[in-house]
Image 1 (spheres, rainbow over the protein chains, first blue to last red):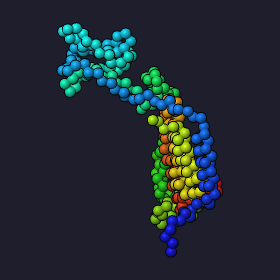
Image 2 (cartoon, chains in turn yellow, purple):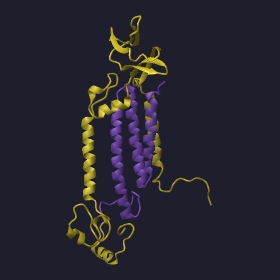
Image 3 (tube, rainbow over the protein chains, first blue to last red):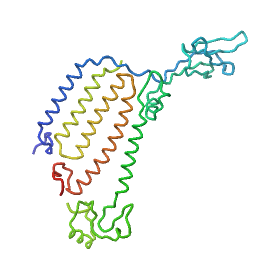
Image 4 (cartoon, chains in turn brown, yellow):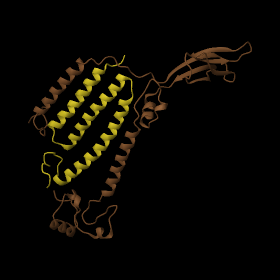
Length: 210
Length: 101
């Protein structure tokens, strides 16, 4: 009695598998030799920068302003206003936050890959960040939606309970329900067999004759 | 340090060829279904890798649609396998050789 590992018996010859391995070797050689170049990559998502504006809760006196092409946090104090540059760009998502006894100017650059995929799927191209673009997939989304719904509705409409004796389906009538015999989806048993089945009224587990 | 795109392509080629070998050598319909799934996922790896290569999200979005399509395909495939089992008492794809039985 053998105890060593053996190849499965249901393989249809191993020559095709060798051909597949050969295909892999060819593909790997082509890919590793191809001049692909460096990846452009995605912008870093949710990059957050903190700037301390001072101790204590200054949120009532502080505001975020755009000055000369940059975003600054301005804190109003008795000795004059104090500005802290948060970003060298306008239109960034900046806010003033009080946390841990200090007030911070927080800039969160929310370039999110997942969000942009969502915008692309629903055709919201104007919402996409400028440095992370995608095609508009709204038409594709609707088409796949329609096809999947049609498949589901078709499956439910055509479904029958596959038991010998009664026909139970979405659009079955009283006449259908009274028909005895095997349903067509059991592989097409002969009329005689169907009659025998209905008399015997014993369902085989596989639903019909093999 | 990003992984070079070539490595993603080699991984994808390996996955594709494993799936191809499965389809060519097996007779079990369930193994067929799994192998087709491997080949589809190899295509998905390429979509995502080239998406990163060009810094454009079209490939990632397309990979999502491929996944939805693969799920629908498996649902249909399992239905076919159930009928195959009911009619032949087996899920060997070489049994169902005729157009009608």
